[in-house]
Image (tube, helix red, strand yellow):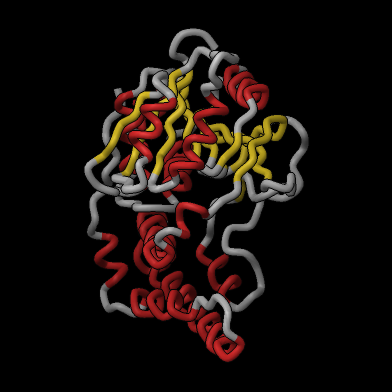
Length: 314
């Protein structure tokens, strides 16, 4: 990797210690100094993340934002300030080994037909996590609501070589800049979740390919930043789900998905209400809020009326 071929964009919101740990892996003092740029886009944190990152890692390009406009909003700001041919998105709760990063870049360089590449994702104990999946279908949500299947099932057993897939995980997500020039940046209508699924769908609609690269492995703990604003992220997932489907499957099918999500929330609320007498952490309040949102008249129509916000990439 020579010159600014690789731009690593990290979005941070109130995860200072995780951010500093990740930057220490990417920019070790007195250690290996790979030829790339690291950009930190901070979504109006109030935990001292910006000052700490600037003080400890002068090499990092720290870009504070005046508001928390969501993940896609922050990523697009980072992309606009980057120079690399490849842009890698990293969550702050990931761990990086440079050998795996090189494997991911090397696999991408060998496949000019590919626009997006994602590695194998492991949890902190080395257990494989969902790394890629088939494009979500409306029927998947009904099956999930009544406990007969997962919302977005994995593609299935994959060989050890780089493999075309529908979608890869957004926690470690590498995209070719030239493809972003063609299709635009992430859609800023998505506050959180489904922005990577939407981008992968746009890539495939443009005749390009998405690849899963199992020979490169990254560790992702997951959900740590989301837990800081549990209600907002819980609702954002469901809103983003409807936004994605109304864009790609139309209003009628999306109304069916809304109904399936509502049924699922009602059933899960009943479960958590039954657990209330036993104390402990309870998610009944989250499901009440989701039911209120999903029951709102005209919700799908409101989402359908929102114009795409995919800024141009230079």
